[in-house]
Image (cartoon, rainbow, N blue to C red; front, side, top):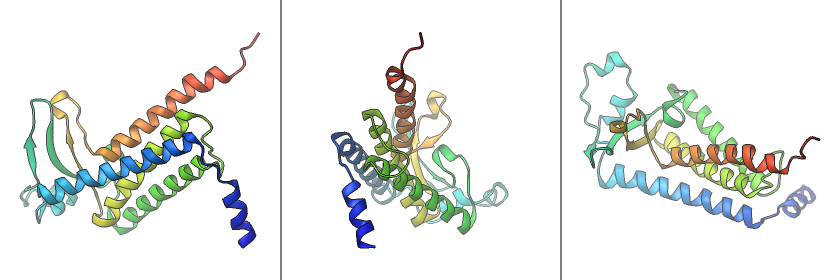
Length: 200
């Protein structure tokens, strides 16, 4: 067992790109959790009854009051408290304890697999800078939302650009995940293509 652990430790390579990915992961996670603390604790955007209202189905909501916080910051941006039962931008909603912990487990597994990739372990190694950036952003976002789901059974979303015809309310973890996916696409379609030999 010790030999195997020593082998894993020796295989870990923390390159400059891996450090960048780790810094991004930590930054997204900290910014996400601090912003949620400000909204939930300092602004008290989720008083008693708000989470119950957001988690209720449409029929149950008809007899409830929505007391969740809302501040109109500008003509294009509001702070609006929404508890999201799904993944990023409300996709793949999960009700009940089993669905909640499956999503937490999935998020943690994704984060660990990408962390292993940053450290040059496992099948998904980050071999280019854009991959390390992508992995770091997704790790931070996945863990940020997993913390909410484990603590509350739903994810705290509050950034609202619906006045700009963007219908989803989201948080900093969602931004990290989506920027990470964009970085993967940039890497695949630009940097990976540059490395491929041209056909004669």
